[in-house]
Image 1 (cartoon, helix red, strand yellow):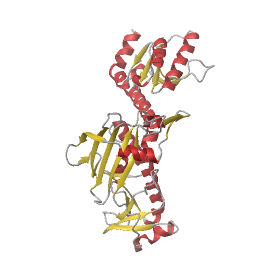
Image 2: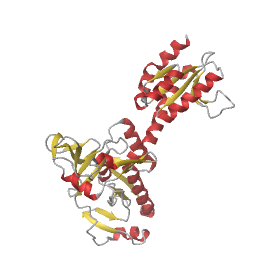
Image 3: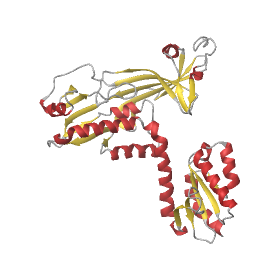
Image 4: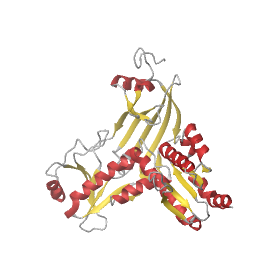
Length: 377
């Protein structure tokens, strides 16, 4: 089957429906286009796991399976995700995603089927929740999941239209506190589109949890509260859930800080003998030309720049050019988060103006000290 007419007579490629506006990728897919992509003939090329459902590494409450699909004409690629919550057996999700050629956009969820999330069943309020309803001005309802577990139905939604998953139960220690929890649903929902599969992503997740006072018990997020502060803590818990589900949007900024945190930690502890100074301005008349670190253990200082994107690469190259024009005595070093993330042009520009480059932070951690000693000899 060919794709003729799928995306109009003049343009039948779904990739062309992805456009850039102000350097931001915008998806332009009509309902008709989505429907025809869903019906497009496909074959399963890979199943993970091959049989049955696997337990998620980050949460024992989540069973998962992923399928890789390819269209019969080998033009397009798709994923199917299957998720099942073992804590709430009625909670499941199955979705089909279309893989685009645009790195910024990535994959688009075409359709998703959910198990019953409780939004359509309104149970009577329990005495335990009268205070909560009062704090919410009566704008909530409850749904009894099982004994000692109640779902709050509150008018707060995720970007895909799903209501947030917030549950209440008595604290296990049998005190008067209430436990706000998600029954593993937040990480389950995140796993549809985003995997926490690296130390930096784990650090981002843990940072979000710590900032909001939320604990993680094998994938089940929870926050214990007294009745006095239940409203404030429910809203704090909901805010934490939404931050976690938006990790993919603000990961770049957090990973940026993680890169510089790791660089700073290594320099301050492992290169302390080379007398590092942070945020040095060699040309006092040009305070914008700042060096990340200066090692001043010899007469000729070493100027080090950490580079994790093209903007920092350009700024570092400009600074080095100005230092050269001013005829400053120095040796320059560039530490990349990953040099392969830069364009060939930016790589060449830095190579022409720097004395030494380390392609990754790991490489600098491995040979940085010996390189400083060698270049200073």
